[in-house]
Length: 126
Image 1 (cartoon, rainbow, N blue to C red):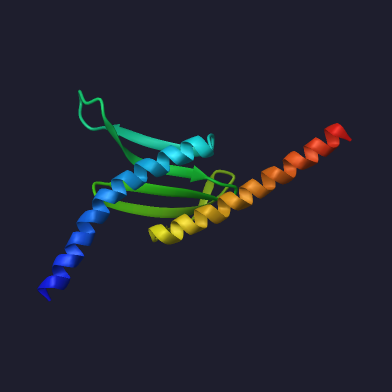
Image 2: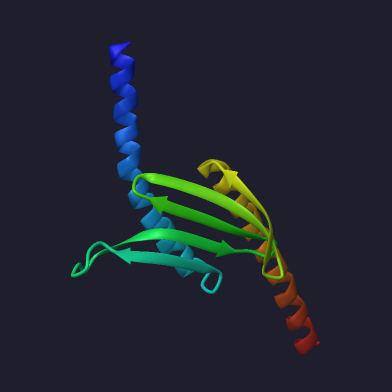
């Protein structure tokens, strides 16, 4: 039992360290890849500190807002069903389900934008 406990706590410590880097990397990637759809809230590490950390990431898609909040070592992820700026439903999701759903909604958004771009191109060039 002692070995299992030690292995489990080692994985938890590693995940906590990895999660900070993951959140930072996710925010940077989303800000660069889908500008205008992402809000990142950062907080300074101290009054005179030059460094900051991410408190939340919000990604807006057509039908949902994806919210990731980091509080210390804890991460919470929510998908909010939003219609015309009004939140109709909040769903607490595990990080893996949240990421899968986000990827699917971004693919749908991309498809719609590609379709609109092609239609506009055809209209202007045809």
